[in-house]
Length: 239
Length: 239
Image (cartoon, rainbow over all chains, first blue to last red; front, top):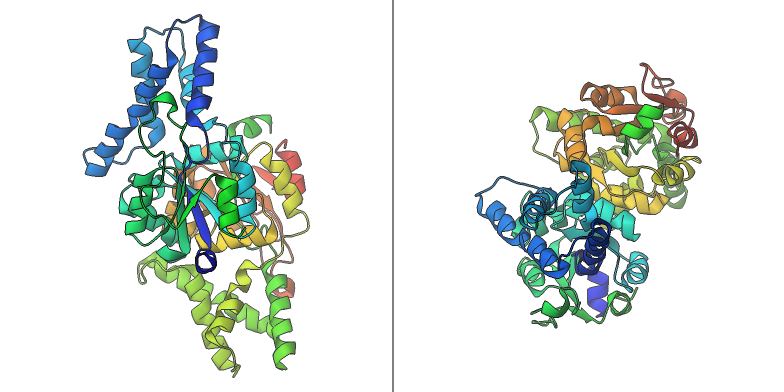
């Protein structure tokens, strides 16, 4: 591990799921909205449907079917459709905008801020997320994440796991791929990073998707570091 | 001012000169090097020549004569030439790299960190500098600047005052131009920003260039905010 700790100088983090509990945070906001508006809606499948709108939208950008579009826009389009489907009326434009931005009001996992704070003493830290650049700023401010900068798929104008996303980040960081480690709770993300020469760190987040989580319970490859949580990652990285 | 304070949500800062005293910091490092190596060199003109290599290099990128090149590279080329011109030998590659990176070991003006810390309570803060993205991270870490993210001319792959630099920053911030204020000690920078619809804040840094400073002693236009220093800017912006 000593060699890895000396070669790696920057850590980039998947954010939704790896650092913040988007699902628990969004569910809380949706349930509170339901109580305020006296709605009888099962918010878990609502949120699942909202979140899943992300995959086909991302694919369309990556295939060239759609021009570059920020994630914010996709989530908002999906939200408007879901509100109509569930006959939820009475929300104005500002309310919908506020609700959509719940994706930025996400609480960190209990170990995230402590672990990042330790890691920052030794490494440059940045998110590398499919969230937009502006949303990542808001996520970091809300959760108190001590990043040194922000990197988004938006910097490459396509989505993970397209190689450009990782390589644009590495280039902006002014480093070689093997000086940068991607930390993620998702094996697909790490596979893409490793294929480009980046180092890889895995943290399992087995409750990210609640009772319906079907994958990413454990590391599926021999990632460079496999950690229990962010504090364990900091320890294993000598920070 | 109330209207301005409510409309603006993000502040972007010229960095070398506006936030950090690059000249005093570099001179200290050069003088220390001179003492260690027992060199008899007048470091003020040396530094002036080093700094001035920046202008023609920047122009060549902006005119298309040169492809995008990071500022780090220009400063290093100029440094190697200057070392040869002054017959300074005995520095290895690592020493030269370390010396070139003195541009990232710059101390903030005495009011900078306090002012930025106040401003951060109300506004999103970012540099917008011709320094490279990676160097801006190092500048922020060295000086303890509480930025929310980093924005560089590198994001637009051309240099200020090209419009793309400001507009790329505004777009990544997810805002309209009039929601973003550029803060700078240089009137040319503010003129470019204002012509694109950004708000403008001026702080005079009359000792930036030492005794040879010839301009930017005061605001040359009615910028939206004209402040004594960063703390005064925070006060005037209601932070």
